[in-house]
Structure formats: structure tokens, C-alpha cells
Length: 232
Image (cartoon, rainbow, N blue to C red; front, top):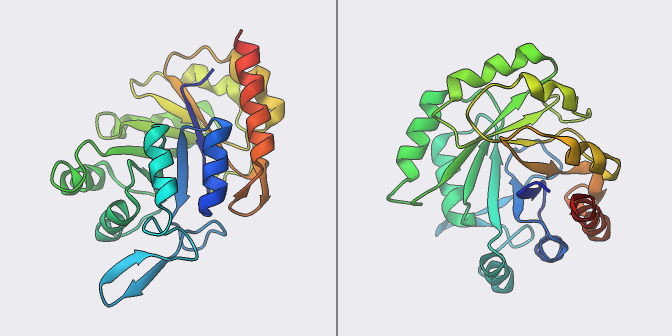
């Protein structure tokens, strides 16, 4: 079974709590403005804080406690955003991982890490999304080796097609990766069959939704149970 079960595109505190109890150990918060799963923020005289209608840790202390107890990490997804905006969200949402989903350069990633670690968030980790539709696309990974902690492999920028699992044999990099690409309940056997030593997790999103940003927790719980059953 993958070490990391990341459920991406979440927004509602109660839904996040239910997904954590279902077995997920990483939650993705989408900070890409044109996404239907966008986590908004509210501008106030005191600065920028999470919008109470979206996700407010000051009013959802039970959620913050649950995430800590279950050792669930929060991953913020950004696309070609300003570094200062990313830093602000890391602070306000207590993010553990920053996932960069656009054309961010290795230099930008190094600068972002230096801005956050160690003064603002010691040990912050970075994840770079790479779009893979053919074996040749793995060449995109090489410039990021040593600059990112993880890759996330998906199929298209909008992540609307299933990943071709057979392509993974062509990945010769040294950085661990997570798989995305319309993963659903029917992929249990295919996931268990992956033998690549650097495949450490999977990313679940729209196939487990009842509405944008609202996850079907029963479906996720059943999926994770099937993964565990197949592992025995």
C-alpha cells in the first residue's frame, strides 16, 4: 500500500476531518484562483487570514488538533504564484508542503525554500507537479533533481485523464513521487502492481467527489480498505 494517501482539493473543515478518519494522511488545499476547489482568504485590517467560510483554524481548533494527532500533513497547491503569497498561505494555513503546479523554476523553488526554512517553517517540503503523457516527458524531471522533495506525476494540466501506469518504468530519477491522474476505485489492483521503489503515494481528487471540494468519505474509506486488503 502507498505510504501517502493524499486527498486533494479540500475546503470544508468537517469534510477534512471525515477524510482523515477514513485513512488519508495528506490533505491538499488548492490555492489556484480559477479552480472550483479554490480555498479563499479574507483581507482584513490585521492582514490576510483564512476566510471563515472556507477554512479558519482559529474557529476550527478541533481540526487542527486532529491533524496533529493523526500526523496528517497539509499540502498547499499553487500555480505560478508570487512567492510572498505562498509564504503568507504557508503561515496562515500551517502548511507542511508546498506543491508547485505551474512553470516554476528550480531557482524559484530554492529561493522559496530559503524564505521559509528555517526562519518561518523549519523543514518545509516542496513538491513539483510534472505532466507525463509519454516516456519522453520524464526528461522534465532532471532539472528539478535536488531542488524538490517530491514529484507529483499527472497526465494533463487539468488532471482529467487516467495515468498510464506502464510509463513509470521509464522514470530513472532519484526523487520519490506520488501518482495522480483520475485515480478511482477501479485502480486498486493497478496500484498494488506498481513495483517502482520511488513510488511513495497516490493523489485522490475528482473521482471521489460528490461536488467540487466535497469528498465522498465512504467511498474513500472503502478504497483505502481495498488497498489494505489487496496488500495482505
